[in-house]
Amino acid sequence: GNSVTQMEGPVTLSEEAFLTINCTYTATGYPSLFWYVQYPGEGLQLLLKATKADDKGSNKGFEATYRKETTSFHLEKGSVQVSDSAVYFCALVTGGFKTIFGAGTRLFVKA
Amino acid sequence: DAGVIQSPRHEVTEMGQEVTLRCKPISGHDYLFWYRQTMMRGLELLIYFNNNVPIDDSGMPEDRFSAKMPNASFSTLKIQPSEPRDSAVYFCASSSWRQGARTEAFFGQGTRLTVV
Image (tube, rainbow over all chains, first blue to last red; front, side):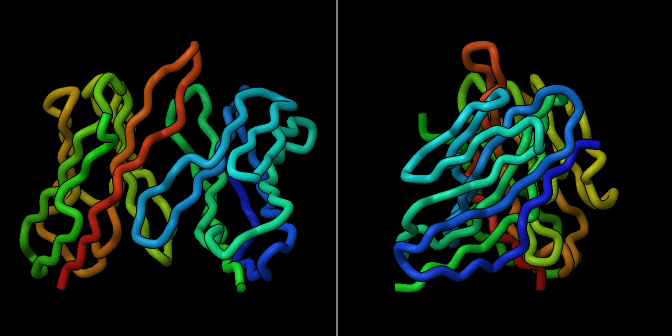
Protein backbone atom coordinates (compact mmCIF):
# COMPACT_ATOMS: atom_id res chain seq x y z
CA GLY A 1 0.00 0.00 0.00
CA ASN A 2 0.93 3.67 -0.06
CA SER A 3 2.96 4.99 2.84
CA VAL A 4 5.32 7.74 3.95
CA THR A 5 8.29 7.30 6.28
CA GLN A 6 10.09 10.26 7.78
CA MET A 7 12.90 10.56 10.26
CA GLU A 8 12.00 10.44 13.90
CA GLY A 9 12.41 13.51 15.99
CA PRO A 10 12.84 15.60 17.80
CA VAL A 11 15.52 17.38 15.85
CA THR A 12 17.31 20.07 17.84
CA LEU A 13 19.47 22.63 16.04
CA SER A 14 21.11 25.94 16.80
CA GLU A 15 20.02 29.00 14.90
CA GLU A 16 21.62 29.29 11.43
CA ALA A 17 22.37 25.55 11.28
CA PHE A 18 21.59 23.46 8.19
CA LEU A 19 18.43 21.37 8.32
CA THR A 20 17.64 18.07 6.64
CA ILE A 21 14.53 16.03 7.41
CA ASN A 22 14.45 12.78 5.48
CA CYS A 23 11.30 11.47 3.84
CA THR A 24 10.81 8.37 1.71
CA TYR A 25 7.62 7.03 0.25
CA THR A 26 5.98 3.94 -1.20
CA ALA A 27 3.26 4.51 -3.75
CA THR A 28 1.65 3.04 -6.81
CA GLY A 29 1.49 5.30 -9.81
CA TYR A 30 2.82 8.84 -9.72
CA PRO A 31 2.00 10.61 -6.47
CA SER A 32 2.22 14.30 -5.71
CA LEU A 33 4.44 15.02 -2.71
CA PHE A 34 4.03 17.65 -0.02
CA TRP A 35 5.62 19.06 3.09
CA TYR A 36 3.28 20.53 5.68
CA VAL A 37 4.22 22.50 8.79
CA GLN A 38 2.25 22.66 12.04
CA TYR A 39 2.93 25.43 14.53
CA PRO A 40 1.78 24.98 18.14
CA GLY A 41 -1.98 25.15 18.52
CA GLU A 42 -2.62 25.41 14.81
CA GLY A 43 -3.66 23.23 11.91
CA LEU A 44 -1.33 21.98 9.20
CA GLN A 45 -0.23 24.44 6.54
CA LEU A 46 1.26 23.57 3.19
CA LEU A 47 4.94 24.44 3.09
CA LEU A 48 5.86 23.23 -0.38
CA LYS A 49 4.96 20.63 -2.97
CA ALA A 50 6.14 18.82 -6.09
CA THR A 51 3.87 17.07 -8.54
CA LYS A 52 6.30 15.13 -10.75
CA ALA A 53 9.74 13.59 -10.74
CA ASP A 54 12.70 16.01 -10.54
CA ASP A 55 10.45 18.92 -9.55
CA LYS A 56 11.81 21.08 -6.75
CA GLY A 57 9.38 22.66 -4.35
CA SER A 58 10.54 25.71 -2.40
CA ASN A 59 9.11 28.21 0.05
CA LYS A 60 10.45 30.41 2.87
CA GLY A 61 13.97 29.11 2.32
CA PHE A 62 12.91 25.46 2.50
CA GLU A 63 13.46 23.14 -0.47
CA ALA A 64 12.67 19.56 -1.40
CA THR A 65 13.28 17.66 -4.65
CA TYR A 66 11.05 14.83 -5.89
CA ARG A 67 13.46 11.92 -6.48
CA LYS A 68 11.66 9.05 -8.18
CA GLU A 69 14.75 6.85 -8.38
CA THR A 70 15.21 6.91 -4.61
CA THR A 71 11.50 7.49 -3.77
CA SER A 72 12.52 10.41 -1.57
CA PHE A 73 11.47 13.98 -0.85
CA HIS A 74 13.91 15.27 1.76
CA LEU A 75 13.30 18.69 3.27
CA GLU A 76 16.25 21.09 3.55
CA LYS A 77 16.95 24.60 4.71
CA GLY A 78 20.33 26.26 4.70
CA SER A 79 19.93 28.39 7.83
CA VAL A 80 17.16 27.74 10.32
CA GLN A 81 15.63 30.33 12.61
CA VAL A 82 13.96 30.02 16.00
CA SER A 83 10.66 30.75 14.27
CA ASP A 84 11.05 27.52 12.23
CA SER A 85 10.42 25.48 15.37
CA ALA A 86 7.38 23.37 14.52
CA VAL A 87 6.32 19.87 13.48
CA TYR A 88 6.96 18.98 9.85
CA PHE A 89 4.91 16.37 7.97
CA CYS A 90 5.79 14.72 4.69
CA ALA A 91 2.76 13.59 2.69
CA LEU A 92 1.65 12.16 -0.62
CA VAL A 93 -1.50 12.14 -2.68
CA THR A 94 -2.17 9.43 -5.23
CA GLY A 95 -4.99 8.74 -7.62
CA GLY A 96 -7.08 7.69 -4.64
CA PHE A 97 -7.14 11.36 -3.69
CA LYS A 98 -6.57 10.93 0.01
CA THR A 99 -3.53 12.50 1.59
CA ILE A 100 -1.26 10.07 3.39
CA PHE A 101 0.94 11.64 6.05
CA GLY A 102 4.17 10.61 7.70
CA ALA A 103 4.41 10.55 11.48
CA GLY A 104 5.79 14.08 11.68
CA THR A 105 9.18 15.36 12.82
CA ARG A 106 9.39 17.94 15.59
CA LEU A 107 12.06 20.58 15.10
CA PHE A 108 13.44 22.72 17.93
CA VAL A 109 15.70 25.63 17.02
CA LYS A 110 17.72 27.21 19.84
CA ALA A 111 18.80 30.83 19.80
CA ASP B 1 -12.29 32.69 1.20
CA ALA B 2 -12.07 32.27 4.96
CA GLY B 3 -10.53 28.83 4.70
CA VAL B 4 -11.81 25.67 6.35
CA ILE B 5 -13.84 26.60 9.42
CA GLN B 6 -14.25 24.24 12.33
CA SER B 7 -16.32 24.63 15.44
CA PRO B 8 -16.01 24.56 18.32
CA ARG B 9 -12.28 25.23 18.80
CA HIS B 10 -12.34 23.56 22.19
CA GLU B 11 -14.78 21.09 23.67
CA VAL B 12 -14.76 19.59 27.13
CA THR B 13 -17.36 16.97 27.85
CA GLU B 14 -18.09 14.22 30.30
CA MET B 15 -17.70 10.57 29.45
CA GLY B 16 -20.87 9.17 27.94
CA GLN B 17 -22.06 12.43 26.43
CA GLU B 18 -22.63 12.97 22.73
CA VAL B 19 -20.16 15.26 20.97
CA THR B 20 -20.67 16.88 17.58
CA LEU B 21 -17.84 18.54 15.70
CA ARG B 22 -18.59 20.78 12.74
CA CYS B 23 -16.78 21.73 9.58
CA LYS B 24 -17.35 24.13 6.72
CA PRO B 25 -15.01 23.36 3.81
CA ILE B 26 -13.67 25.89 1.37
CA SER B 27 -16.33 26.77 -1.18
CA GLY B 28 -15.96 24.75 -4.38
CA HIS B 29 -13.84 22.01 -2.82
CA ASP B 30 -15.18 18.56 -3.63
CA TYR B 31 -13.18 16.45 -1.16
CA LEU B 32 -13.55 16.67 2.60
CA PHE B 33 -11.42 14.80 5.13
CA TRP B 34 -11.67 14.23 8.87
CA TYR B 35 -8.41 13.54 10.74
CA ARG B 36 -7.62 12.86 14.37
CA GLN B 37 -4.28 13.82 15.92
CA THR B 38 -2.85 12.41 19.16
CA MET B 39 0.64 12.21 20.57
CA MET B 40 0.55 8.42 20.53
CA ARG B 41 -0.84 7.77 17.05
CA GLY B 42 -0.01 10.95 15.17
CA LEU B 43 -2.33 12.07 12.38
CA GLU B 44 -4.98 9.50 11.42
CA LEU B 45 -7.43 9.77 8.55
CA LEU B 46 -10.88 8.86 9.87
CA ILE B 47 -13.10 9.31 6.83
CA TYR B 48 -13.31 11.26 3.61
CA PHE B 49 -16.08 12.42 1.30
CA ASN B 50 -16.23 13.21 -2.38
CA ASN B 51 -19.12 15.37 -3.53
CA ASN B 52 -20.83 14.78 -0.17
CA VAL B 53 -20.62 10.98 -0.50
CA PRO B 54 -18.50 8.98 2.00
CA ILE B 55 -15.76 7.22 0.05
CA ASP B 56 -13.62 5.58 2.71
CA ASP B 57 -14.53 5.27 6.37
CA SER B 58 -12.05 2.54 7.19
CA GLY B 59 -10.27 4.83 9.63
CA MET B 60 -13.30 5.36 11.84
CA PRO B 61 -12.27 3.67 15.06
CA GLU B 62 -15.61 2.34 16.29
CA ASP B 63 -19.34 2.46 15.72
CA ARG B 64 -19.46 5.25 18.28
CA PHE B 65 -18.07 7.50 15.54
CA SER B 66 -20.21 8.70 12.66
CA ALA B 67 -19.82 11.40 10.04
CA LYS B 68 -22.22 13.08 7.67
CA MET B 69 -22.06 15.60 4.89
CA PRO B 70 -25.61 16.72 4.13
CA ASN B 71 -24.46 19.34 1.61
CA ALA B 72 -21.33 20.72 -0.02
CA SER B 73 -20.78 23.33 2.66
CA PHE B 74 -21.20 21.39 5.89
CA SER B 75 -20.02 18.22 7.59
CA THR B 76 -20.29 16.81 11.08
CA LEU B 77 -18.35 14.23 13.04
CA LYS B 78 -20.30 12.76 15.93
CA ILE B 79 -19.11 10.64 18.83
CA GLN B 80 -21.78 8.93 20.89
CA PRO B 81 -21.11 7.99 23.62
CA SER B 82 -17.78 9.72 24.13
CA GLU B 83 -14.92 8.13 26.11
CA PRO B 84 -11.74 9.60 27.62
CA ARG B 85 -9.60 7.87 24.96
CA ASP B 86 -11.38 9.97 22.32
CA SER B 87 -9.55 13.02 23.64
CA ALA B 88 -7.57 14.43 20.71
CA VAL B 89 -7.43 17.25 18.22
CA TYR B 90 -9.81 16.65 15.32
CA PHE B 91 -9.02 18.32 12.00
CA CYS B 92 -11.18 18.84 8.98
CA ALA B 93 -9.56 19.45 5.59
CA SER B 94 -10.77 20.00 2.04
CA SER B 95 -9.22 19.87 -1.41
CA SER B 96 -10.06 20.56 -5.01
CA TRP B 97 -8.63 20.55 -8.51
CA ARG B 98 -6.37 23.17 -10.01
CA GLN B 99 -4.83 23.07 -13.48
CA GLY B 100 -5.71 19.41 -13.92
CA ALA B 101 -4.16 18.22 -10.67
CA ARG B 102 -5.51 17.68 -7.17
CA THR B 103 -4.55 20.49 -4.82
CA GLU B 104 -3.09 20.03 -1.41
CA ALA B 105 -5.45 19.56 1.51
CA PHE B 106 -6.36 22.80 3.28
CA PHE B 107 -6.78 22.31 7.00
CA GLY B 108 -8.98 23.95 9.57
CA GLN B 109 -7.56 24.99 12.92
CA GLY B 110 -8.92 21.92 14.61
CA THR B 111 -11.19 21.12 17.53
CA ARG B 112 -9.45 20.11 20.72
CA LEU B 113 -11.70 17.56 22.42
CA THR B 114 -11.25 16.61 26.04
CA VAL B 115 -13.44 13.88 27.49
CA VAL B 116 -13.30 13.69 31.28
